[in-house]
Image (tube, rainbow, N blue to C red; front, side, top):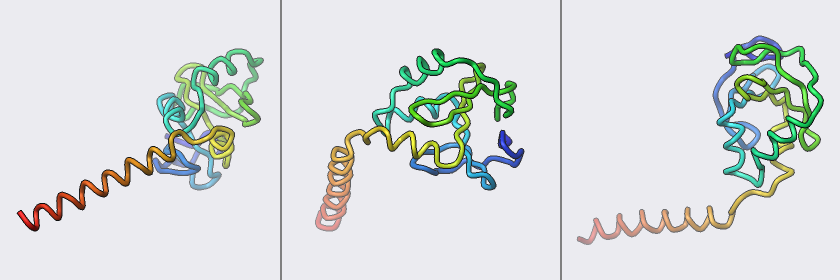
Length: 135
């Protein structure tokens, strides 16, 4: 895939607190539809609210082309963040810092629960090692 902004190749990696296809030049990030949906798993972001908001906004054509090759993107704003999204594949282009700004508007889901689970997993591993040594 190529960057909608500058045409350079996108690289899959973690950035701005989420995985996606990143441009190393402009620092933008392309999120295919399933990656936009996955924002729900790390924060209070609602994909349904996001889609409804995009559907309600006046359609403005962007000068950028979909990274998946579908055609021109549509330009919208969601919760104060500029989003250029594809009406065909529902992927979205976020300019540098935009995904982090969007995630910052939503509290993280179960940070305490995640730490607790990690603690239990670490304990289970340690217990397994101890049992293996003395068994």
